Image (cartoon, rainbow, N blue to C red; front, side):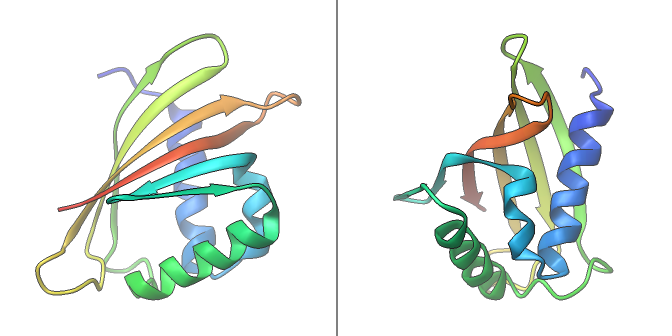
Length: 127
């Protein structure tokens, strides 16, 4: 597995930001427009307000309150081009319904105009 410390740091910071409820910082992490695919649902966000509301509601559903019991693992990152990367993340320890204890999340990351990483697509698989 190829290690990508920039992606790992970026995604860990995103996780910490979401746990802290700092949804107004979403523009730091997400490119607009961005797409989130969750189960059979596809969401396209064109502005910060829409994205912040969705993130807030989704994090409440996950009961993200602290990082103590949350295990975040960057499984792999694949470089698709000089500006696009695909990262697969595993989250354990979420306060979901009893039969949903694990999320596999894939992010498509792109270098923005200022060369910072931004999330373009998120696919959430509940296991």
